[in-house]
Amino acid sequence: MNKKDYLQDISEIKNLMNKSSKFISISGLAGIMAGVIALLGAAFAYWYMLDKGFYPGRKLDSSDFIVLFIDLALVSIFSIITAIILTTKKAKQHQQKIWDALTRRLLFNFLVPLVSGGIYTLVILLQGKYGQTAALMLLFYGLSLFNASKYTLGDVKYLGFIQIVLGLACAFFPGWGFWFWVVGFGIVHVIYGGMMYVKYDVKK
Amino acid sequence: MKHIISNINKAFDHRIRLGIMSVLMVNDSVDFKTLKDLLGVTDGNLASHAKALEKVEFISVEKKFIGRKPNTTYAATELGKNEFKKHIEALEKIIKHT
Image 1 (tube, rainbow over the protein chains, first blue to last red):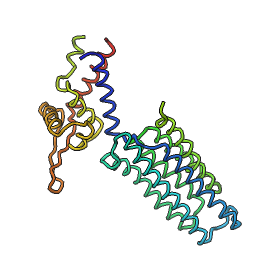
Image 2: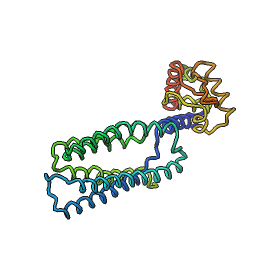
Image 3: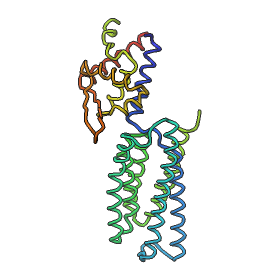
Image 4: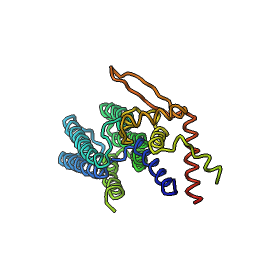
C-alpha cells in the first residue's frame, strides 16, 4: 500500500463513522419553510387579535384562545409535513435511510424533551398563565434540538443554544412573548435554515 | 519507521474489515443488515470478514431472534477499540512521514 491508499482509508473511515452515527440529511430548506410558516401563523394571530382590540395584559376569552390554538397547531403541522417531505428528498440524494435505527434514535432524543415540554406548556396554558407560553416553547424546543444534535449535523446544536437563550430571555419579559416567539420560531429559523442551505446544499 | 509499521494491524488490512470497525467504533451495536447496507457488501462477504474480526476478539457477536427471524448484532470489544486506535495512529504517522 502506498500513501494514497492510506489517505483513502482514512477518508473512508471518517465517512463511515459519520454516515453510521449521524443523520446528515437535515434540510436547510425545511428550516426556511418552518420559519416562513411560523411568520405567517404569527401574522394571522397578530391581525386577528388587533381586530379584536386586544391589548397586552388583557385576558384572552375562550373563543380567541381556541382560534389561536388552532393557528398554532396548523403552524406545527405544516412545518412538520414540509420538513418530512424535504428531508426525505435529501436523504434519497445522500442514499441515507429515512427510517432506520439512526433516525429512530434521532427522533427519540428530539421528542422526549419536546413532548414533555409541550404537555407542560399546555398545562400552564390551561391555568391561564399565557405570559410564559412563548418562553416555555422556545426553551423546550431549544433543549430538544440540543439533545438531538449529537445524532445529526453539529449546526443543530447552536440553533438549540440560540432558542434556549431566547427562551430564557423571554421569561424575563412575559409581555413580549409574542415577539420573542416570532424571532425564535420565525426569523431565527429562516436565517439559520438559509445558512445551512448555503453551507450544505448550494453546489460549489 | 519500523515500529510504526509494526502497529499496522494485519487484522484491519482489508477495506471491509476497516469499514466494520469504523462503524462499530461510533455505535454501541449494529445489526447485520444495517452494517451490510452501510458498507455496500454482500451477505457472504460481510459474514466472512466479521468472522475474521470475531476470531481475534476485536468484535463480539450476539445472535438473537426477533419473532422467528434471526438477528445478528455486532459490537466492538475493548481490545478491538484499542487496536483500531493504534492502527489509525499508525496510518496517520505513515501519511505524515512519507
